[in-house]
Length: 118
Image (cartoon, rainbow, N blue to C red):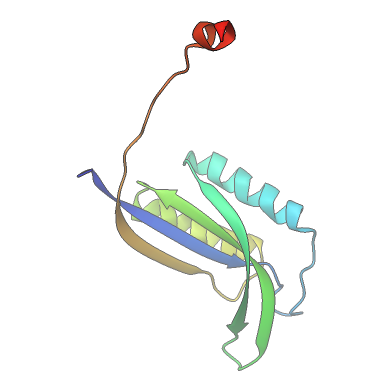
């Protein structure tokens, strides 16, 4: 497993930066996230977490957060996606982290005929 590549993670809160509340159903945000990734033609994974955030003016908010993972995506593309999601979700900011990781694709098939015979 020596195939090193970059994994970027973008954390996007769902509370509106001005009102401090989530304006739309989570599924609406997920749909936007999927469309952004599809338009940039990047493979992606995401999940939902909960977290807390201190705004620049000192306000504290707890919110649902989408965590978007991109592997082997150019950094410039990651930053463009982060900017788009920040704007579309009306966020003060989004957090982007990057780490090197090993990537291996495992492929295996199942012999359907031998399974059916048993």
